Length: 247
Image (cartoon, rainbow, N blue to C red; front, top):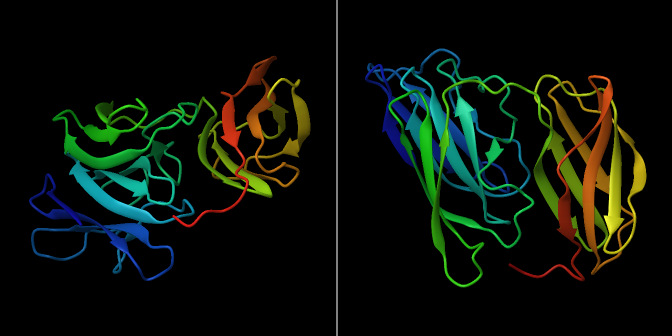
């Protein structure tokens, strides 16, 4: 459980809750008289709808009654940060799953032992233990502004690879293109268009590729037309496992 004092003298709390499986992260804001602040639910507000097990949430106040909350998707050991405003709603432009601490294109990275603190300017600083070095763990830090996010860039927010399929979720804020092409290539091959897909009303695109071959390395990207020109998302490498292992 994470606990922090907010700017009004009340409390901000974040915890991992096992009312469902896998457990999810929730948050609550209490006023100085111990009553719930408007917009906050009696059983807490859900931090993220990312599939998986949400562990070790930590909270930092933004100085305006809201909070920045980190959590780990424990199945993949991936860290996320989410912005919740004073009224219990997500910050404008923040994806429903939050933002990944580390770009998905960086291989062999896990985010452990996350901690978060306010930066005294309406934002927050997150520090974590990272495994990307491949030799020993290293500490990394990232600062998040208190400003809302302008929806301009398309980014991958979650990925799950199984022996028979790959599930990907992209976010594009409030200015998502209506329709995109989902492209994939295997090592040494050219890009192929898997099909067309659309972002939903929340600026999210969920796509399942069930044509993969177990044990194969693929790379995914999106292609679309915007501002009179062709746009491409960042490339995302995926290793399809041969079998599911007990973790």
